[in-house]
Length: 71
Image (cartoon, rainbow, N blue to C red; front, side):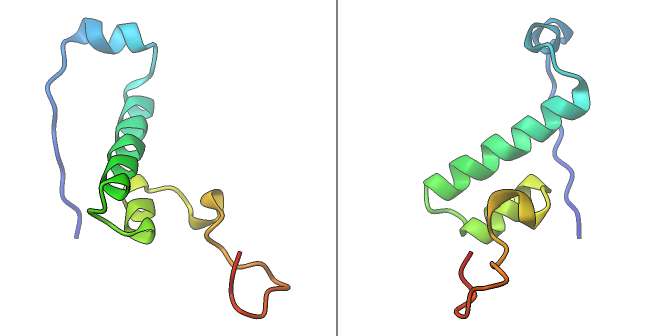
């Protein structure tokens, strides 16, 4: 299930950031995930889910030579 959250921003604010709308949305997801994790609201795995980034980008995959499943 997906939940959509919308924000209203002044167009000049987005222009000042020099980011495309999709890039800005991605940065907001990452920032929200980091803050939620930092405040103990979500686990590292749930924070990664919030970012919509692939699991291998953040070192959460297991190393093929690891016997205990650690990265």
